[in-house]
Image (cartoon, rainbow, N blue to C red; front, top):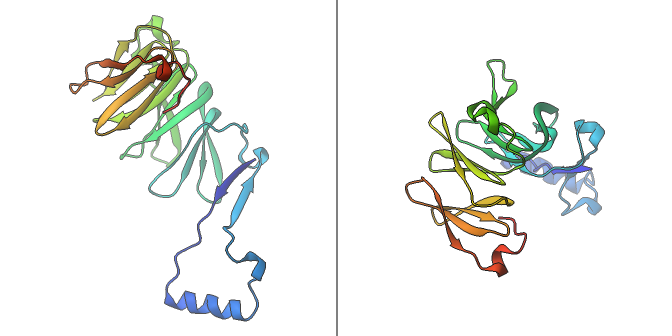
Amino acid sequence: CLATTRMPPRLDFRHLCLASLFMFAGMVRASDAGHTPIQHFTQRDYQGHNQVFDIVQGPDGIMYLTNRGAVLEFDGSTWRRTNVPTIWVRQLRLDASGRIWLAGSDEFGWCERDEQGVLVYHSLLEQLPADQRKPGQVWSVELFGGAVYFSTSTHVHCWRNGVLTSLPMPMAARAYFGAGGGRLYLFRSGDALYRLDPDGGKFTAINRDPAIVGNNLFT
């Protein structure tokens, strides 16, 4: 089952005094003291698969979760489902505009609310050449330097200013992004650790130590 933690509301001084009176009146059991309230949800509650690869939270507090063929949305009381034409959605990233970028199986793109406030999915596959629209597993997505990067086993795709560019990689490998120190890195299992060049034009291998790249690490 899936569990989410709901934080208690902030209390002003009047609420705090009232809560104290309730406690002294015995309305709060001693056995509950110090326990974080946890609410559990089953697959029947959220109408999805029990496997969740990633969770992000928007500035409004709404939670978004990856799932089988969908992005799940939870606002604290109601579950909603946005279907995505993929077997699995693996990873999510939320940008400042509220777009939810995703990486999935043979699929990548973003979700955005329409005029009615409904979350709608937009695929980027049509931006690829016709013979490349089955990209395989899209392992990772990352926001960096005003662009959105997607990693597949054989390519890195970059969406910047409404244009999609593709960088071929030297061999097929699982590939995961990680950012640190103002730089973007790409770990490719069995290949190398790469770093994005300052001009954003390519990734350069900086470490091929088998002790590092030979392990199935996740960034």
